[in-house]
Image (tube, rainbow over all chains, first blue to last red; front, side):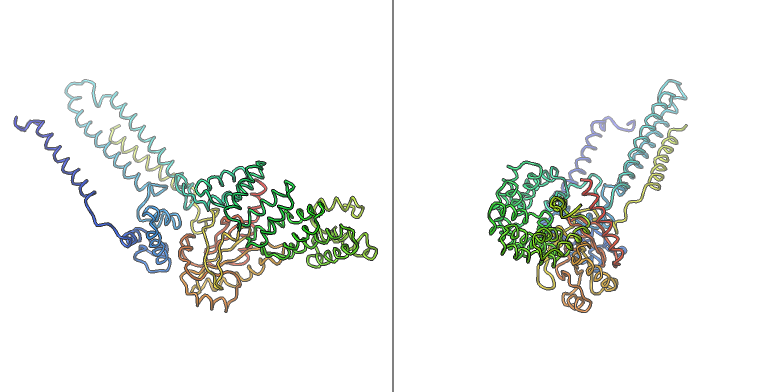
Amino acid sequence: MSGSSPRQGPGRGRAVWLLVLAVVVGSLVASEVADRAPRTNADRVHALAGDFACPVCQGQSLGESDVPIARTIRSTIRTMVDEGRTDSEVRTMLVDRFGEKIDYTPTGRGLTGLVWVLPVLVGAAAVTGLALAVTRWRSVPADSGTGCRGAGTPRATSNRTLVLVGVAVVAVVAGVLVAHTAGDRTAGDALTGDIRSSTRTLLAEAGVAAPAAAETLYTRVLEIQPSNVEALAYRGWSRWRTGDRAAALVDLNEAIFLDDAYADVRVFRASARHADGDHTGAAVDLTVLDGLDAPPIVGDLLDASRLRQRIAGALASGGELLAALELLDSGLDSGSGAGPAAGRVASLLAERGWLLASTRVPELVERGLANLDEAVAVRPTDPHALAYRAVVGSGVASRADDVVADLEAFATLESPPPDLVAALVSMGLFDG
Amino acid sequence: MNPVRRAALAVGLVLAVLVVVLATREAGQDRMTSHLVGAVAPPVAGGTLDGAHWDLDDQRGRWVLVNFFSTTCVPCIEEHPELLAFAGVHDGSDPAVPEVRVVSVAFDDRPSAISRFFIEHGGGWAVLPADTGRIAVDWGVVAVPESYLVTPSGHVAAKVVGGVVREDLEGLLDRALAAVAGDRAGS
């Protein structure tokens, strides 16, 4: 400050700079928080549509393009804005569905993050270079005049070299990490993982998880939606499968209390009741189920487990043949679990015939054989129908030829139920 | 060495390493054919041509082929016989063949044109003719036809961009069945 007069000392100079700084900062703050007219939903839709590229156009934004997909996305943005979604939520949805390439505002994630990182790196390098150059210029006269140790001496140069090497190593490592992370990321994935989760997603993930993991996922759903019947029912079933029977029944009963028309839980509770020896209660659950509009998976579950047939067998063994037949007839009459019905009908008819024939009452045996004939006619490869008819027919002289034919057909089955094979072998009808 | 030159050398080295890494890294999957694959299928629900309500969530336990189409798109018209053949084979009548439910979701089309299209070309599966914009956006559909194979657990197993061919669909289904069987065996 050799040119400054005593009246314009360092204190006055600092005050001027502080004033300038205050004015600049104040202006920025005022411009940011000044009253503005609130943006309408239409303004937001217009702004958002201008911030994203049309996925199938060249150089046109969603707002500018009139191709169907652009119109559809604009309509979706409008709907989301009207629903009260934030701009950030809309942006997230669009990037998630169509990729970052349509986002005109590059994010700090993945490869596009380099857009932000590279200028900073270059700027830092430039400042560093400038500082080094200034230091060098200042050090030249000092070195030449005095020869004392300072900037520019071997030690100072060595320190600067170490700093430079350190900066270079950090930059290289950061660059490699950014690049590799961008490469590993699949489309639609976020760099730091996806924290978005919905109950629907959790339920779907739980559907393919092991029982213990599924129970955790269903519990998370219930933390979000305590009255989610599907989560309650399936958590109950998961708990049943992992052996926690008391907690399972609490969940299953609660699910039925909340929605007595939810089909899946009826199957679960029927299975639980059957396992606990409450066959009548199990039959009630399945009879209620037959009056519901059940999804196909419920029918598949019943078919695969033969739950209805097993409950009917248990009822008949307990002397409740009529209840057993009613349960089977209810299954035959219902359309629950629409799908390939032939197998289901044959299996239920076979069970009906077997229970009737097992009474050994001639009239009922005759009816049972009629049911078994019908079952084989509906599905000639039904293992239970073939085996049951062979066993029942072996006690009827006029059926000898049919027995041979049934056993031959049974022998050709690819994977007959082991319990049936064992039963036929123990009766001497089949040699395995 | 001059410190400025060293700084310049360091920056140059950083940039060179970046170029090498970016040039040699494995390319990411093609979003066009991989988007949503492995993820939970987004919702598909709405009124059908025959006035019923159809919901993908009601199809749990079934394989589903979600087909986005338009009656004005030529590839959609060309793929229709292939869809018919695929749906016919996988209609559930043969226990040895996995059942696959087909659902067609119209994209930017008129219900009357869609109705006429299915009368003329056949196809007895569920067709969602209207209010499907949100569905298309949820699935990230960019241009029709696009088709997605959904597993019985509700996950997207495969995506087909452009018109489908029955043999290709069978291949995708076989691979998906094997993957599902592998998952079950592993769990």
